[in-house]
Length: 154
Image (cartoon, rainbow, N blue to C red; front, side, top):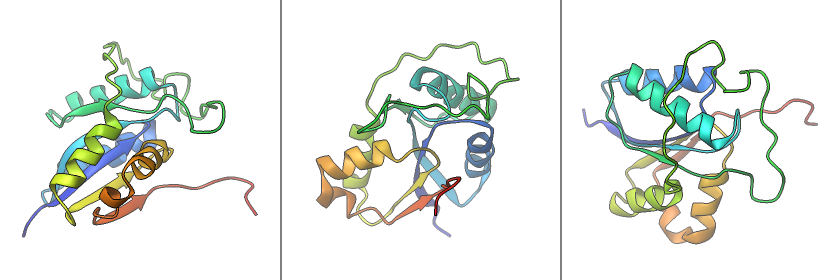
């Protein structure tokens, strides 16, 4: 069986941490990149959290930081996961932010037409930016899998 190629786009809080660990451990999944987006916490904290998770899993998947705020409004971070997004876990490494998430998403999808599943665990800002920049490239993604939800939405 050929492994499914994925990109994990995330704002790691506790829920994303579990999803990422499960994906990295799955024998039929090939994570080509992890990209971060502000959401559960600011971009620095979620990127630090993503690096921590990759190290916890002893995984060398490439990590790229992305959007530090939504496209059209001010960032409002979640409080359910604490200020860092992973409160209760000692995440001490400060990852240098590269801002290359959208570039890498486009590069990977472009290089693997029809093969890439985008596992979107946080706000869809990086994905929206990629679609706005290169809509034809993003049409070549195999699928978009979104872990999303909302409170008080009619």
